[in-house]
Length: 322
Image (cartoon, rainbow, N blue to C red; front, top):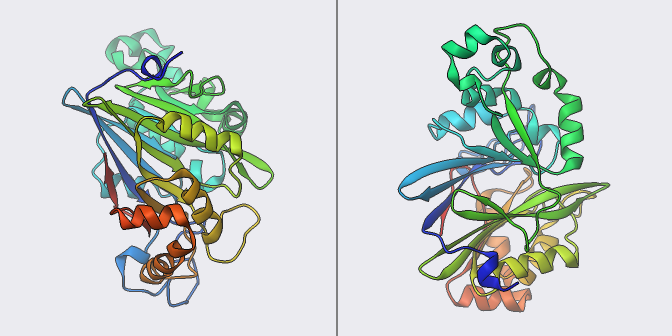
Protein backbone atom coordinates (compact mmCIF):
# COMPACT_ATOMS: atom_id res chain seq x y z
CA UNK A 1 0.00 0.00 0.00
CA UNK A 2 1.43 3.37 -0.96
CA UNK A 3 1.47 6.52 1.10
CA UNK A 4 -1.04 8.16 -1.25
CA UNK A 5 -3.59 5.47 -0.50
CA UNK A 6 -3.02 5.77 3.23
CA UNK A 7 -3.94 9.41 3.49
CA UNK A 8 -6.65 10.88 1.35
CA UNK A 9 -6.10 14.40 0.11
CA UNK A 10 -8.36 16.80 2.01
CA UNK A 11 -8.96 20.49 2.39
CA UNK A 12 -8.94 20.97 6.14
CA UNK A 13 -7.37 23.31 8.64
CA UNK A 14 -6.47 22.02 12.09
CA UNK A 15 -6.08 24.13 15.20
CA UNK A 16 -5.12 22.74 18.60
CA UNK A 17 -5.94 24.86 21.65
CA UNK A 18 -4.20 23.88 24.89
CA UNK A 19 -6.98 23.91 27.48
CA UNK A 20 -4.73 22.80 30.32
CA UNK A 21 -0.96 22.40 30.62
CA UNK A 22 -0.68 21.35 34.25
CA UNK A 23 -0.04 18.15 36.14
CA UNK A 24 -2.61 16.18 38.13
CA UNK A 25 -2.71 18.73 40.96
CA UNK A 26 -3.01 21.69 38.63
CA UNK A 27 -1.10 24.91 39.35
CA UNK A 28 -1.50 26.57 41.77
CA UNK A 29 -1.52 23.48 43.95
CA UNK A 30 -4.00 23.46 46.84
CA UNK A 31 -2.39 24.85 50.04
CA UNK A 32 0.96 25.49 48.30
CA UNK A 33 2.66 28.85 48.87
CA UNK A 34 5.63 28.39 46.54
CA UNK A 35 6.68 31.20 44.21
CA UNK A 36 5.22 29.44 41.14
CA UNK A 37 1.85 28.87 42.77
CA UNK A 38 1.83 32.52 43.91
CA UNK A 39 3.05 33.83 40.54
CA UNK A 40 1.18 36.73 38.95
CA UNK A 41 2.05 35.47 35.44
CA UNK A 42 -1.12 34.01 33.91
CA UNK A 43 1.01 31.43 32.08
CA UNK A 44 1.84 29.89 35.48
CA UNK A 45 -1.82 29.06 36.13
CA UNK A 46 -2.08 25.56 34.72
CA UNK A 47 -5.32 23.61 34.64
CA UNK A 48 -5.22 19.84 34.27
CA UNK A 49 -3.82 18.67 30.92
CA UNK A 50 -6.32 18.76 28.05
CA UNK A 51 -6.64 20.16 24.54
CA UNK A 52 -9.27 21.04 21.94
CA UNK A 53 -8.76 20.17 18.28
CA UNK A 54 -10.81 22.22 15.81
CA UNK A 55 -11.04 20.96 12.23
CA UNK A 56 -12.40 23.27 9.55
CA UNK A 57 -13.46 21.03 6.70
CA UNK A 58 -15.54 22.64 3.96
CA UNK A 59 -15.92 25.76 6.07
CA UNK A 60 -17.60 23.96 8.97
CA UNK A 61 -15.65 23.87 12.20
CA UNK A 62 -15.83 20.63 14.17
CA UNK A 63 -14.49 20.26 17.71
CA UNK A 64 -12.74 17.29 19.27
CA UNK A 65 -11.67 17.19 22.90
CA UNK A 66 -8.50 15.44 24.07
CA UNK A 67 -9.18 14.22 27.62
CA UNK A 68 -11.95 15.47 29.87
CA UNK A 69 -10.49 16.13 33.32
CA UNK A 70 -11.99 17.75 36.44
CA UNK A 71 -11.34 21.25 35.03
CA UNK A 72 -13.32 20.60 31.84
CA UNK A 73 -16.30 22.80 32.77
CA UNK A 74 -14.03 25.79 33.42
CA UNK A 75 -12.00 25.09 30.28
CA UNK A 76 -15.11 24.85 28.10
CA UNK A 77 -16.45 28.15 29.45
CA UNK A 78 -13.10 29.86 28.89
CA UNK A 79 -13.09 29.06 25.16
CA UNK A 80 -16.88 29.40 24.76
CA UNK A 81 -17.20 25.80 23.60
CA UNK A 82 -20.70 25.43 22.12
CA UNK A 83 -20.41 22.17 20.22
CA UNK A 84 -18.45 18.95 20.49
CA UNK A 85 -18.14 16.22 17.88
CA UNK A 86 -15.98 13.67 19.69
CA UNK A 87 -13.50 12.99 22.47
CA UNK A 88 -10.08 11.31 22.37
CA UNK A 89 -8.97 9.80 25.68
CA UNK A 90 -5.33 9.17 26.51
CA UNK A 91 -5.98 7.06 29.64
CA UNK A 92 -8.40 6.75 32.57
CA UNK A 93 -6.56 8.58 35.35
CA UNK A 94 -8.68 11.02 37.37
CA UNK A 95 -7.03 14.17 36.01
CA UNK A 96 -7.94 13.07 32.48
CA UNK A 97 -11.48 11.67 32.80
CA UNK A 98 -13.19 13.06 35.91
CA UNK A 99 -15.03 15.72 33.93
CA UNK A 100 -16.79 13.07 31.86
CA UNK A 101 -20.22 13.76 33.36
CA UNK A 102 -20.14 17.30 31.92
CA UNK A 103 -20.16 15.79 28.44
CA UNK A 104 -23.93 15.42 28.91
CA UNK A 105 -24.45 19.01 27.75
CA UNK A 106 -23.10 17.96 24.35
CA UNK A 107 -25.23 14.82 24.07
CA UNK A 108 -28.26 16.78 25.21
CA UNK A 109 -31.06 14.46 26.26
CA UNK A 110 -29.27 11.36 25.05
CA UNK A 111 -29.62 9.29 28.21
CA UNK A 112 -30.43 5.59 27.97
CA UNK A 113 -33.70 6.09 29.85
CA UNK A 114 -35.00 8.80 27.54
CA UNK A 115 -33.92 6.90 24.46
CA UNK A 116 -35.98 3.90 25.57
CA UNK A 117 -39.11 5.98 26.24
CA UNK A 118 -41.16 6.15 23.01
CA UNK A 119 -42.98 9.36 23.91
CA UNK A 120 -39.84 11.21 24.97
CA UNK A 121 -37.97 9.91 21.95
CA UNK A 122 -40.69 11.43 19.77
CA UNK A 123 -40.50 14.78 21.57
CA UNK A 124 -36.71 14.83 21.63
CA UNK A 125 -35.41 13.22 18.40
CA UNK A 126 -31.82 13.87 19.49
CA UNK A 127 -32.22 10.90 21.83
CA UNK A 128 -31.76 8.62 18.81
CA UNK A 129 -28.36 7.46 17.69
CA UNK A 130 -25.36 6.06 19.50
CA UNK A 131 -24.31 9.24 21.29
CA UNK A 132 -21.13 11.30 21.46
CA UNK A 133 -18.14 9.32 20.07
CA UNK A 134 -15.36 8.78 22.61
CA UNK A 135 -12.23 7.18 21.16
CA UNK A 136 -10.02 5.12 23.47
CA UNK A 137 -8.09 1.86 23.87
CA UNK A 138 -9.76 -1.30 25.15
CA UNK A 139 -7.69 -0.97 28.33
CA UNK A 140 -9.14 2.48 28.94
CA UNK A 141 -12.65 1.35 27.99
CA UNK A 142 -12.64 -1.34 30.68
CA UNK A 143 -11.87 1.17 33.43
CA UNK A 144 -14.18 3.88 32.11
CA UNK A 145 -17.11 1.46 32.08
CA UNK A 146 -16.24 0.27 35.60
CA UNK A 147 -15.66 3.70 37.10
CA UNK A 148 -18.66 5.37 35.45
CA UNK A 149 -21.08 2.46 35.44
CA UNK A 150 -24.08 4.78 35.94
CA UNK A 151 -23.51 6.34 32.51
CA UNK A 152 -23.97 3.05 30.69
CA UNK A 153 -27.02 1.69 32.50
CA UNK A 154 -30.72 2.45 32.16
CA UNK A 155 -31.84 4.71 34.99
CA UNK A 156 -34.65 7.02 35.98
CA UNK A 157 -35.79 9.53 33.38
CA UNK A 158 -34.32 12.96 33.94
CA UNK A 159 -31.17 11.53 35.46
CA UNK A 160 -29.11 13.72 33.16
CA UNK A 161 -26.34 11.32 32.17
CA UNK A 162 -24.34 11.72 28.96
CA UNK A 163 -24.91 9.29 26.14
CA UNK A 164 -21.50 8.13 25.01
CA UNK A 165 -20.52 5.93 22.09
CA UNK A 166 -17.20 4.32 23.04
CA UNK A 167 -15.09 3.56 19.97
CA UNK A 168 -12.21 1.14 20.60
CA UNK A 169 -9.10 2.18 18.66
CA UNK A 170 -6.89 -0.88 19.20
CA UNK A 171 -7.13 -1.94 15.54
CA UNK A 172 -6.12 1.42 14.08
CA UNK A 173 -2.57 2.23 13.05
CA UNK A 174 -0.54 4.03 10.37
CA UNK A 175 -1.82 1.59 7.73
CA UNK A 176 -5.40 1.80 8.94
CA UNK A 177 -6.05 5.28 10.36
CA UNK A 178 -9.33 6.59 11.68
CA UNK A 179 -10.99 8.86 9.12
CA UNK A 180 -12.82 11.69 10.86
CA UNK A 181 -13.90 15.08 9.51
CA UNK A 182 -11.45 15.09 6.64
CA UNK A 183 -8.44 14.12 8.76
CA UNK A 184 -6.66 10.88 9.59
CA UNK A 185 -6.14 10.00 13.24
CA UNK A 186 -3.65 7.40 14.46
CA UNK A 187 -3.26 6.21 18.08
CA UNK A 188 0.25 5.92 19.52
CA UNK A 189 0.93 3.40 22.34
CA UNK A 190 2.83 5.00 25.24
CA UNK A 191 4.22 3.74 28.55
CA UNK A 192 3.12 5.52 31.73
CA UNK A 193 4.81 3.74 34.62
CA UNK A 194 3.08 0.36 34.93
CA UNK A 195 0.18 1.22 32.63
CA UNK A 196 -0.30 1.92 28.93
CA UNK A 197 -1.59 5.21 27.59
CA UNK A 198 -2.50 6.49 24.14
CA UNK A 199 -0.99 9.40 22.26
CA UNK A 200 -2.68 10.77 19.14
CA UNK A 201 -1.45 11.81 15.71
CA UNK A 202 -3.78 14.11 13.76
CA UNK A 203 -2.99 14.26 10.05
CA UNK A 204 -4.31 16.47 7.28
CA UNK A 205 -3.34 16.95 3.67
CA UNK A 206 -3.85 20.28 1.98
CA UNK A 207 -2.36 21.65 -1.21
CA UNK A 208 -0.71 18.23 -1.69
CA UNK A 209 1.20 18.65 1.57
CA UNK A 210 0.84 16.51 4.67
CA UNK A 211 0.72 18.24 8.06
CA UNK A 212 0.59 16.62 11.48
CA UNK A 213 -0.06 17.51 15.10
CA UNK A 214 1.22 14.94 17.59
CA UNK A 215 -0.12 14.88 21.18
CA UNK A 216 1.80 12.66 23.62
CA UNK A 217 0.97 13.26 27.26
CA UNK A 218 1.38 11.09 30.37
CA UNK A 219 4.32 8.92 29.43
CA UNK A 220 7.80 8.14 30.67
CA UNK A 221 8.75 5.90 27.75
CA UNK A 222 8.04 5.89 24.01
CA UNK A 223 9.04 2.64 22.34
CA UNK A 224 10.93 2.49 19.08
CA UNK A 225 7.82 0.96 17.47
CA UNK A 226 5.78 4.00 18.50
CA UNK A 227 8.46 6.37 17.28
CA UNK A 228 8.46 4.52 13.97
CA UNK A 229 4.68 4.89 13.79
CA UNK A 230 5.04 8.66 14.18
CA UNK A 231 7.71 8.72 11.46
CA UNK A 232 5.54 6.66 9.13
CA UNK A 233 2.55 8.95 9.62
CA UNK A 234 4.60 12.06 8.90
CA UNK A 235 6.63 10.59 6.02
CA UNK A 236 6.54 12.91 3.03
CA UNK A 237 5.18 15.73 5.17
CA UNK A 238 5.89 17.69 8.30
CA UNK A 239 5.03 17.54 11.99
CA UNK A 240 4.06 21.13 12.65
CA UNK A 241 3.54 20.67 16.39
CA UNK A 242 4.49 18.11 19.02
CA UNK A 243 2.86 18.45 22.44
CA UNK A 244 4.70 16.17 24.85
CA UNK A 245 4.65 15.22 28.53
CA UNK A 246 7.47 16.96 30.44
CA UNK A 247 6.65 17.05 34.12
CA UNK A 248 9.79 18.59 35.60
CA UNK A 249 13.58 18.68 35.48
CA UNK A 250 13.99 15.90 38.07
CA UNK A 251 13.34 12.28 36.99
CA UNK A 252 9.91 10.80 37.72
CA UNK A 253 8.64 7.21 37.69
CA UNK A 254 5.67 7.81 35.36
CA UNK A 255 6.35 11.05 33.49
CA UNK A 256 9.06 12.38 31.20
CA UNK A 257 11.62 14.65 32.73
CA UNK A 258 12.66 17.67 30.68
CA UNK A 259 15.72 15.76 29.45
CA UNK A 260 13.66 12.73 28.43
CA UNK A 261 11.16 14.90 26.59
CA UNK A 262 13.97 16.71 24.78
CA UNK A 263 15.53 13.41 23.71
CA UNK A 264 12.21 12.20 22.27
CA UNK A 265 11.55 15.58 20.64
CA UNK A 266 14.98 15.36 18.98
CA UNK A 267 14.02 11.99 17.48
CA UNK A 268 10.53 13.09 16.40
CA UNK A 269 11.72 16.33 14.79
CA UNK A 270 8.63 18.55 14.93
CA UNK A 271 8.95 22.15 13.80
CA UNK A 272 7.57 23.28 17.15
CA UNK A 273 7.68 21.25 20.36
CA UNK A 274 5.60 22.19 23.40
CA UNK A 275 6.05 20.81 26.92
CA UNK A 276 2.83 20.02 28.80
CA UNK A 277 1.70 18.37 32.07
CA UNK A 278 4.02 20.78 33.88
CA UNK A 279 4.49 20.79 37.65
CA UNK A 280 5.01 23.83 39.89
CA UNK A 281 8.81 23.45 40.10
CA UNK A 282 9.52 26.28 37.66
CA UNK A 283 7.80 29.33 36.22
CA UNK A 284 6.97 29.57 32.53
CA UNK A 285 9.85 31.98 31.94
CA UNK A 286 12.32 29.77 33.81
CA UNK A 287 11.34 26.71 31.77
CA UNK A 288 11.70 28.69 28.56
CA UNK A 289 15.20 29.84 29.49
CA UNK A 290 16.19 26.34 30.54
CA UNK A 291 15.02 24.85 27.26
CA UNK A 292 16.80 27.51 25.24
CA UNK A 293 20.10 26.38 26.74
CA UNK A 294 19.35 22.65 26.58
CA UNK A 295 18.46 22.69 22.87
CA UNK A 296 22.16 23.11 22.18
CA UNK A 297 22.74 19.57 23.50
CA UNK A 298 20.54 18.02 20.78
CA UNK A 299 21.74 18.15 17.18
CA UNK A 300 18.39 17.83 15.43
CA UNK A 301 16.63 20.31 17.72
CA UNK A 302 19.51 22.74 17.26
CA UNK A 303 19.06 22.57 13.47
CA UNK A 304 15.29 22.96 13.77
CA UNK A 305 15.69 26.01 15.99
CA UNK A 306 18.18 27.53 13.54
CA UNK A 307 15.54 27.14 10.83
CA UNK A 308 12.86 28.94 12.80
CA UNK A 309 11.53 26.06 14.91
CA UNK A 310 11.25 26.05 18.69
CA UNK A 311 10.98 24.08 21.93
CA UNK A 312 8.90 25.89 24.52
CA UNK A 313 6.62 25.30 27.50
CA UNK A 314 2.92 25.24 26.64
CA UNK A 315 0.45 27.41 28.52
CA UNK A 316 -3.31 27.43 28.90
CA UNK A 317 -4.97 29.13 25.93
CA UNK A 318 -2.06 28.48 23.53
CA UNK A 319 -3.34 28.02 19.96
CA UNK A 320 -1.41 25.90 17.47
CA UNK A 321 -2.41 25.85 13.81
CA UNK A 322 -1.29 24.01 10.69
